[in-house]
Image (cartoon, rainbow, N blue to C red):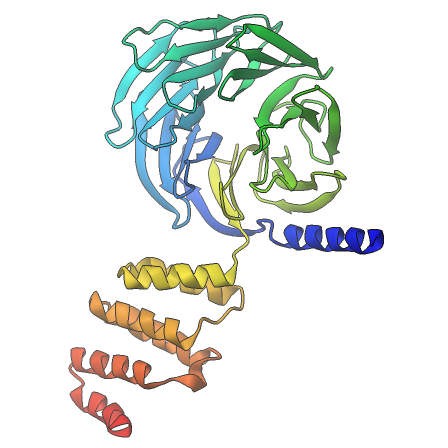
Length: 415
């Protein structure tokens, strides 16, 4: 029984590893200079990026489309975070301010001032009522989004050096600092817990179950801590992290740890045994940020090379269901994009899905796309299965193109 359990556990971990993101989907270009952070929104349908060019940009990472640019910062933008309902965002940077934005209008609702140096990181609380920022002035500061005041409602200044990163739970504020500590502040009872890692910390993130803290340190080591005891659970090595602030996180299943490297590579480690299970070159320069999709096996990364890149490991069945949904809603251009993704990974949709896509193209007046899809269909493995539904689409297309006789020729065999 024990042997069977171990073998089953190994097989499950192997399957999980095979689903990690590796394939590049889109390269998001638009920033002028280094991109310092990239974040998925709460549902993973969009992402935000910020950088040296003093802008924040909103993207559809799955289609590679730039949607909106937010401009108001006076210096580089170092971090950005969006509320759970995706209606507001906050940002920070070298101008020592925290900006509170309306996502849809791009309007700055409020600017919070009080840090005595550059601001490295920002986070909303769960209810989007408070923003917490981490600064070069060795402090964490909390700001009330509902108040008209621009002054902090709380200042935590027990760090001995720059605070680089911040995480929040319902009742705690957690900061990672160059002084080598990860400090947890329970705001209900005013208690502070300090875990000394002995190396400068440039990023922290929480596991999805909130039981662990992952810390990226400037000795090229990621460290996993038990939040309840402070125990060092594991260390992850192989990447280079000595001079830059670089994000780290766990995958949405908490089965793997991921982070970037100064050589442009992305690493995945097994959570339990710390082995490197995947590594690939994503960028031509330092990776500054990694963000994992909340549900799917997809991630976005940003870099000093000025780009944001999306990587994924598609599940063909899920993609085909998504494709059918797009066609039913007449989103044919997006549907064609998904078709190309499926064919690139060697997966052929069913004849029913092909016919649904052909019909959707006709309904929105895109005969050009219909003929392109039909040619791909003929060359695919379902080409021999062309049925009445396919022929009906062809007849309609010929008639729209003014080739009625061609349509009639296709009509005769099916009566």
